Image (cartoon, rainbow, N blue to C red; front, side):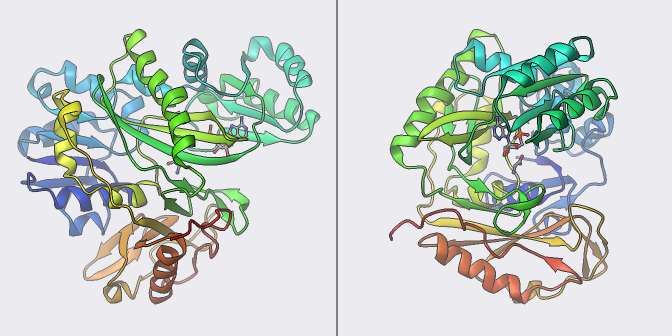
Length: 428
Ligand code: AMP
Ligand code: GLY
């Protein structure tokens, strides 16, 4: 099978690493990729939203399957583009069509979906510029803190949580009247604040059945103790100690099954990964958000725990025979620690030489933002490397990752020393 992966982060390196191990892989390409994906396959200089360029490349290299990493091409309709283009409509796309990707691409769409199918989520209302006053009234009816969400994609910055009512009103006005997030905030969802601990739950579906993947927890804030600015994610753990069988069963029955059935009822076809952002409120799951792709850095702990051949799963998705495929997972814990550029998520410097990578043996180093300069590997983004390790439990896995993080250097490298700090260790 010839496979093209779209994307350039740690998630895409983890997919490339796994696909490269498949007995079915012939040629593997990653567009645009990074220095890590170049070790697993061939990088291709194409942007993820250059549909024409991707089409030409797929024809030239006889690609069978395109695995879409990030949300942007899905929300822009890459799946629909392939289906509507005669020469490439036979190519399997792992990732949902444009309508289904609205589960991530529009907060209002996803909230209406959840309401319609009785999926537990925070109480909410949606407002536009014309209903700003009603928005203020709704804010007044809620208890602080106030959660405001730009409807569309806003590069992970579209959710604002404020404690003060006046500040929340000003934020609403800035989103709606002053288009703070451009078109993305022409509608704003205001919702009730839910107090609890979050986890990420994943399934892969062929539109008929689904397979659960291991759950994970990520650490979004830049600072230790979950403080400071939000980032793309500073580390992750899988499995999640508090997600016991009873809680995971509640998620399956109250969230996963109603979502899959809801998609059927609404006639929405879905072939790809569904990421459920879940919050555990007093042992009940609520959906914070859907994403139409895998998480990053969650993929860097979930995919290493997948024992089965990933291309078997992709084939199941493409031919809608997922129910006939087996999927097996590693019982060990996987932990990843993200090394980032100093200053991230604010301004940071790139092109720092990374040393020590050759001395790492018992961790897997997934590249997030790196590039090659001859034999040298340079930093090329805010998140630079995800150092993943297995362990018999969380602390063992983390210890190995932290030992190896010490061996890797680049100027102003930063990482959080407390990944997993809020989780109570399982006894093993
Ligand atoms: P989202 O982009 O919807 O995942 O929101 C970003 C982050 O904001 C989430 O990961 C949560 O930490 C937080 N968040 C979103 N919605 C709520 C809510 N209703 N209650 C509490 N926290 C929330
Ligand atoms: N780690 C969260 C995300 O990928 O959106």
